[in-house]
Image (cartoon, rainbow, N blue to C red; front, side, top):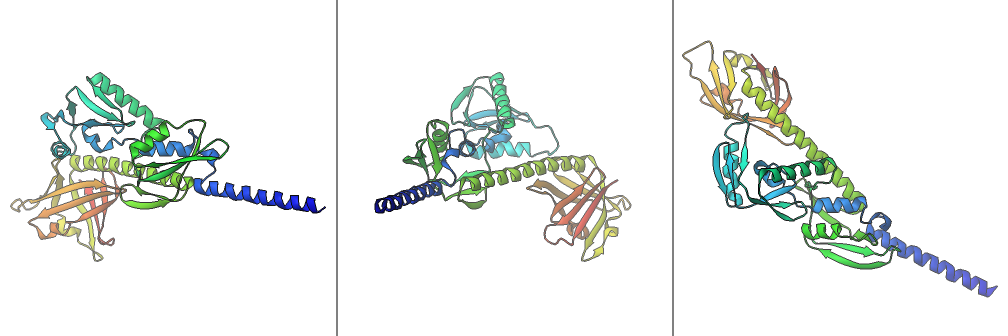
Amino acid sequence: MKNLKLMSVIMLGLLFGLTSCQDEIDNENGNNPNTNSADSVTASNLERSAKHDGSFDDFLDGISCSSILLPVTATVNGSQVSVVSESDYQQVLDILGQFNTDDDQVVLQFPLTVKLSNYTEVVVTNQMEYDALIDACNQAESAGQDAIACLDINFPITILTYSLNFDQTGSVVIESEQQLYNFMNNFSDDELFSVDYPITAIINGDSNVTLSSDIDLMSRINECLATEDAMDEAEESADTLETILVDGLFQVESFVNSGIDTANDYAEYTVDFANDLTVTAVNTVDMAAQDVQGTYEVTSEIDVYLSLNFTGNASFELLNQTWEVTSYSENSISLQSTVNASVTLILSQI
């Protein structure tokens, strides 16, 4: 009987010991190691987050899955530009930004070299080969296999490796995105892995966050992708608003400041937005009155904004600020001050 009791105590001790070891493994993983195989969601999240992000030069090449290695020569809206370094990007942006509703055209000069999302460098010799890259990128985006650019992991991080029976086999310190991509892309099917949490990352280019588990990583990625989608939608809305502004002729229907609507101060004027980012207010009653000149800019983040800057007329200078676009249509544009939400402006098309 004593031997039986002794054996029972030993077995209980082993059981608690095994449970404790498994808890340590689970704590190191932040998730069950079985989920962290080469084809797991976590593996995909890490690999996509570590891919080369080629979106920074999309204004030049139109492909987010790759970037052009400089130097390169391009014809931008009819003007030839030699882009030798990243500082020369501004030349391209200045030409593209001259008019906001024109059809921009960038014609690349071949051959050129691109860096793909897997960090491979490829020489492209003609437009047909380049079009094939565009098609491949579109397919990757449709399949959810493109780079996750909205989450940037802060390195170094440590990845723990396990055999299929959960025995820890080693650890690897990852120092860069390319190293992480190569590690995950070449990870063996007969191994398991886990991230040694906590790690930190930058979300949407500005917010530092701490990630404590695989679930936390997935949640942050879903969150930043949703923000990225909202920013893309806002950019499309900004483009639509620019077209409405340039194609139309407007008047101040309402300008409420300190609870008082002073739209009558603008009743004699029409407001004309040009596609070179200038705006002119013309007095249609007093032909001797001087036109009011100004500039404007439509920008976007999550929301769309219209910035106005008039000179030479006190009434119109009161409109000089950045306005949030709260609603718009071809007939009316409603704006709210980003400084004082009680200040509103409505432009209606004539």
